[in-house]
Length: 286
Ligand code: ATP
Ligand code: ZN
Image 1 (cartoon, helix red, strand yellow):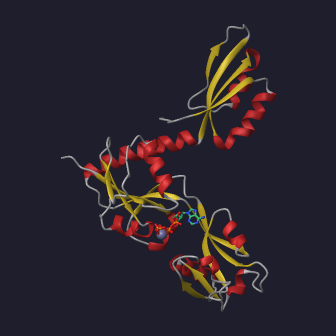
Image 2 (cartoon, protein in one colour):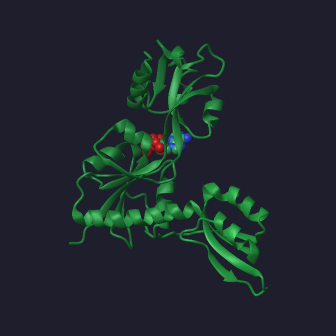
Image 3 (tube, helix red, strand yellow):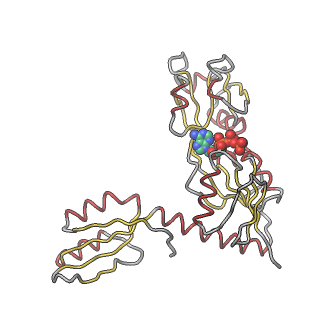
């Protein structure tokens, strides 16, 4: 039985590029030349469906697609019966409450009795309930940021990444409701064949993510400092140590995580490491 896993991807918009790049990094060749609705990958048993992001949770719940790449914000808002399996590391943003920069509203409690415009009425109403705020929610599907200026609302609840849209509309962030990034969601009743393909895809995705979060480090160290330097390098197991042609020196190879990077590099230098090279890792299999 030759099964195919159907993957829903946003057809255009902020998640399209990241989704296609991830598939490519996983070695999956997809051409979306003629703006097709669906495309079969050339070298992996998956078929890509290009859809509006808002529809993806429902299509995955109803098994029109088996899995989907979509923002957590949409997953929470739509509240469909799907499983969230993996964060994908792109499409990062937050859902925030914002108020006019120089208006009379100052704090969360000031939203009592006010009108809030949003495309996320579900998430917002839950949030307001928990915070005990009694405001009216005006659902609009786009350009939420202009609502206060045209007198449609007193505040907004919208996605923010850099904050530049808020700034140009003379708004300021009041509270973050939700941090979001693209995630992989799955239908809850996949066949055994589809589960096997999904496992293989997840394995590739995790290898790509791990590689992005880590760097390969090469450095030269005097032999009498090797112990100290090796203790600074966690590595996958332990660092690789090779003798240099110059006696008394060794070359040390290891892997360090992006988060620890600057901290460790400085300590390596002060402990006598020289000629430090940092190299990106393409895939990382542990
Ligand atoms: P569609 O036509 O598919 O419905 P859309 O207009 O709803 O598109 P986009 O603006 O392309 O959607 O955003 C898609 C997703 O990208 C959002 O749901 C969110 O998860 C993510 N995203 C990341 N940064 C931002 C941002 N600054 N503003 C909006 N969305 C962002
Ligand atoms: Zn959308």
